[in-house]
Length: 142
Image (cartoon, rainbow, N blue to C red; front, side, top):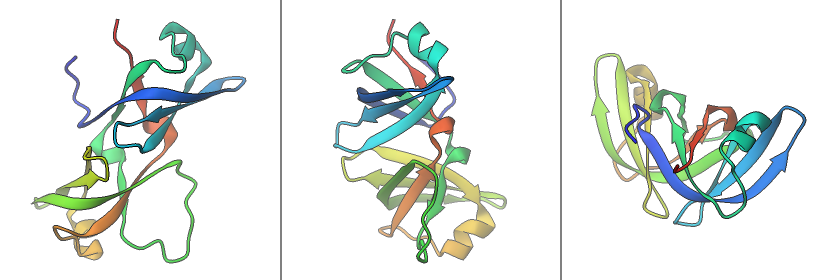
């Protein structure tokens, strides 16, 4: 499968919470972290998603926000994964930031250059990648 989404997480479905329109699907990553996807119940059926099934969770880099200090606030975004900054690629408009999660997975975020300067990002820094469950697209092997 070739897709443009920079973040491709291979994992196993560990929980499903069906709703009237959407379902929440929790995916356990090899390193033990979990992420949550919100997909339609129709997609849940069409993809035959069930507990224990391998899936790939796709998240485009611009949908991943970075937080270096929560300042006492909590966020409504379900996916909050701490990692270490391993790579910064600064440009005049955007900066691409790679984080390594505790399990070794890499998550990429594209943020504005101004935001990267405001966060004073540097290699080795611990930051949290944040993205909403609705920003996750699931794919399954055929």
